[in-house]
Length: 110
Length: 122
Image (cartoon, each protein chain N blue to C red):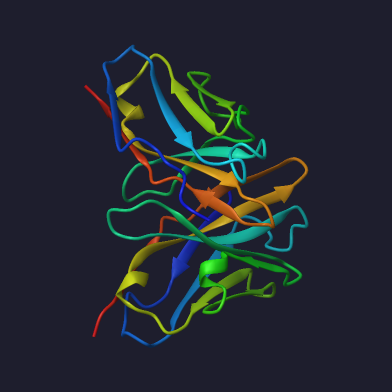
């Protein structure tokens, strides 16, 4: 069970869109539609942003969207805002009631 | 509003046992929909799911830690706990507790504590 692969960092200017990828295998990301995404401002509790690949919890802006193709899931943030600057982590069900996270991506809003 | 709060020693000696408790407020740990999980983050690294427990005591653990980990629940105190034995410096991490939905409606962690740093050092 290896960690999912995310880019270490991405950046964008206010108003732009950015996409964060999350690559796994057919045993996790590719095998199940149970990918979730978390926003983490250091020192605070992580926040659920997307679950079941594409679903948004209530209260999460529709600027955040999720998708999946094969073994790679993606989080897209459109209309970037300063408060979106944070670390983002993906997580996937990996079978046999186990879960695996990604290494995290630092989003910088320029 | 559901809140989770981790508590326990911030410093543990190598080879000893790490013990943490998560206190749940604003909701019942006996809610039949949810599991309760522990996740950790070593310094400068990503998150790692450690394990999850149902209020009845059913547990799931990450295979790589299963020989050293025990998660238990105390419904009377609305708490669940983590024990990790024979710790080494590699177990130094921020430890988070979280509510974990495990059902046909989805698999995700929807409420998290703020985390507590545990350092393994002599």
